[in-house]
Length: 171
Image (tube, rainbow, N blue to C red; front, top):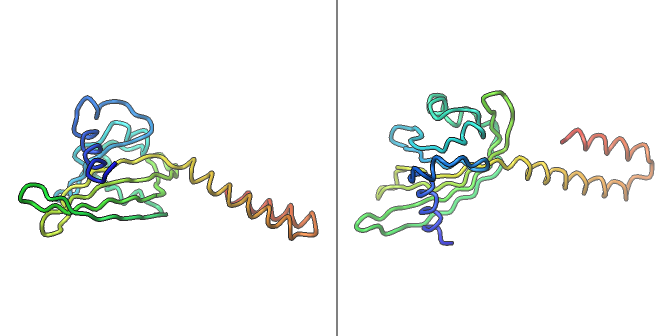
């Protein structure tokens, strides 16, 4: 699927009322306006994922709940839309956020930022999803790898158990 098709899919998910109101447990579709710095459309699952309503999120700002940013990948391209030459940034960002009830949660934001002919950000269309299970699996794989390496080098079983205990605390 091309970048413009991905953007079109996300826009349809947000702007079509019958799609927007479907309760989807795994993804939150949103439209953010840079002019007034607020979410204009967001699927109802935002409350399940973040614990905030759209009004609460607009009041406090998304960045206020971000505790860490793990990964960011960005791709830029242009679309010739009639006489306007639109510039689009596609972003993949993984955040550690704090939900309304204080729980930490890893989420991924795959978004498309539409910029005007002067390269000013205008609108952001995106999808948020919970990636906590994936992050935990990756950490567990790393720890298992470290334990296997240590088991080959540790001569003393007691030291190996101490090392395993330290690794488990990282989870």
